[in-house]
Length: 369
Ligand SMILES: Cc1ncc(COP(=O)(O)O)c(C=O)c1O
Image 1 (tube, rainbow, N blue to C red):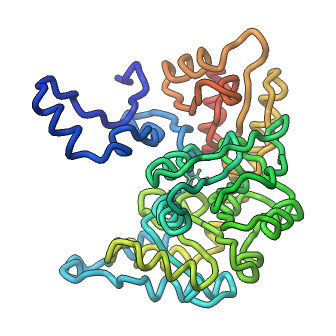
Image 2: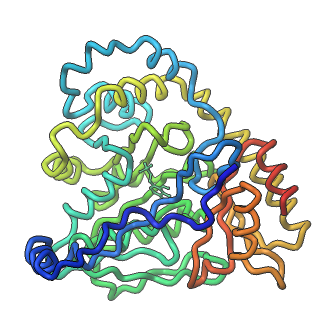
């Protein structure tokens, strides 16, 4: 089995060696884009037999209702553009969350939703705040809008630290549970911060279904500055479909509609997402399995002397025992066709982020350790 020796770092264009081309590029491409530190997505290697625990995908298949839609889908209907505002999907989501469809925006993955919120809710010369460490897309979104990124260092063990009053940000990204730590913050702390903060707070709840008692939707329905982001990528096993959504005040949602691509969610994705949302029991059963496996693996790692951060998500952030370096363990696992995520540098450099797979996959992972 061939497995590339080195993690790919995404797309990099060959650098132009001709001085004239270089001169042109400098003129044609916006300076901030030339300087942008692009987001590095987790690898998606196509290697047979690989145990893939690096991008927090769900190891279980989506609902059988999804397969039915795909099997019966009319290729002929792809002649037509999709519903530009995802009417049926928003109606179903409104039913699930007890809100109005006007409070809902559906995007091409929650990454698109986060990007549009950044565009809509930052001002020239403004700033975006977020905890550190957190989802590494947030600073990229701020940089792309040419606004400052103001990280707030988390307390020891990646616990909550109250963001300073003088942060002067108009937008704060609060992933809850956080990534890559898996830590869920106490609802009272989150609510008090949302009430105090004068800008927009995005409660990024990509992993909320794996947590007990994390749900900012009630806040988003009552506090005009709170937007909740959810995704079908994790608990619904649909990362490849690209469906994410936001719930917030009608004015914020209307701003996102102004900015989005005309047809940002394709026809097939809308139909498949609707089928998945009709079968919540399937998603919930998979979540229960993943949570049980997470707790079992956490205990097994502790037994082997690893430090484990208590997780409310579908992954564990864990540091090998003293004497082993996270990077060495990462490379060893990789060599044995087990792929986890390693974030070099800073406070995460001691840890590996391990997505929770099936019981058999996690047993194989523990065996390689
Ligand atoms: C905190 C957080 N938010 C958002 C996303 C992106 O989700 P989506 O697949 O819906 O773009 C991720 C993906 O890993 C994530 O970790």
